[in-house]
Length: 419
Ligand code: NDP
Image (cartoon, rainbow, N blue to C red; front, side, top):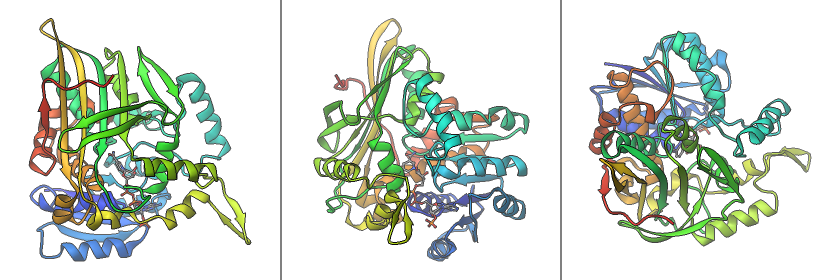
């Protein structure tokens, strides 16, 4: 029996909410609140008669702590699931603290306006001190640790696939497969084809910022930064085949380095096709990825927001995307004094996802873990107070829930390693 408030009603939230409604013994009441209420109403309508979960809707501007507080106080949820954008993480965490409610999200904080001088000064200091220059990092949300602990509340950060399941895979490897882990390579492969020359699989603004940033990885406890897309490898993925993949900065590297400190090298690779990379480079070169407003015919336009308006809505890719994703982690280390390698991953089929929840696999592989993470908090499987990432909790019940709700794990005890 629980009451959950979901904020956001985009591609990922649509999947998470539909999956919550499949587990209507846990998610008995659910309110969908977002900036555009008509999207929440349309989803609530589509769910009518298909679930016992009592679904209601609301309008909220999640940039406003006051609006969030009055919504939370009137609905009185046990948990707030933030599936809006990373820009809203801090306002929603503030509102949860004021109202005494547990919090979770799927991506760590980054500001919408990266030109804000106050934020920029902190960011530039961090770049120098830590050695990586992605706009997002955990420092903003880790700063809430004591406040959540003292309030007796839990904030679960980054509970999608990557971040999210990838960290549960690391916790699982540490718990069951290794005494010590030496290296972790996280491999994110999307072998899907949507037929467009260029489109992003989730929010274009957040996606393009991530992949156009310099890459980085951790070696012996230190960040090593490299120009964007400058380290390329090929890998033969189970059920997908041979793909080019590129080393990227990714948020879970930062928390894994803290929580599994013995690891000597931590890297993240993502596959991209040549058409995607060529388009992205061109858009970047002409300034279309910029977040700095420009004057155009008397209007102020933010180039990347304008680009978002031109690109296909990621939620519309579902019916046209064919193929599979394969996301997982390869480990090297020692067990009982012997060298060991281990690969744990999930394969997900775009069309199967569409048949089940009318979405492509990228939203599916994020929305299902969000629902399973919420289930861990609501059913008392994960109870640690404070601000935590997924690898800090027991991976077993979470991976069992993923197996059951659509993202089963596969294992390989003799994987090809990435050079
Ligand atoms: P979408 O852009 O499809 O959806 C975002 C939703 O948030 C929309 O409903 C939007 O409303 C709403 N929203 C935006 N701003 C506000 C606001 N100020 N107040 C209220 N609602 C707001 O994004 P996705 O569904 O693709 O992504 C959702 C999250 O999932 C993102 O944080 C993304 O980074 C994360 N993600 C995580 C992954 C992982 O593996 N961990 C992978 C993929 C995504 P409106 O409809 O009005 O625009």
